[in-house]
Length: 73
Image (tube, rainbow, N blue to C red; front, side, top):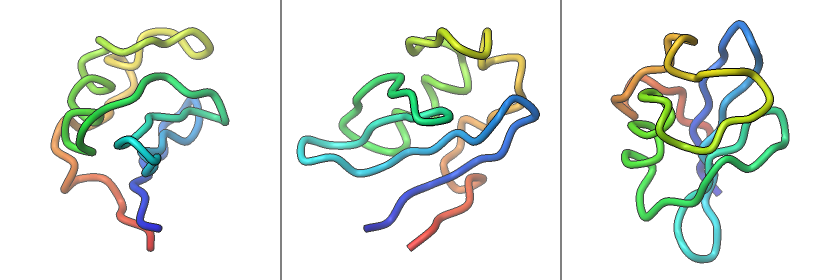
């Protein structure tokens, strides 16, 4: 199972596969479900996904481009 991670000053953002696509998680909290990891990264970087625990993700320097995230097998 491949996932993508990005460490921020507020915690660890992850994009993980699910049975129906991909989910964004942040410190164990699911923030949304997406058809692709690229769409998930873009929404998280722009702050357009659900985000309750750490404030606006667009202020955390999360890259829109999934190639800038660390891919973990």
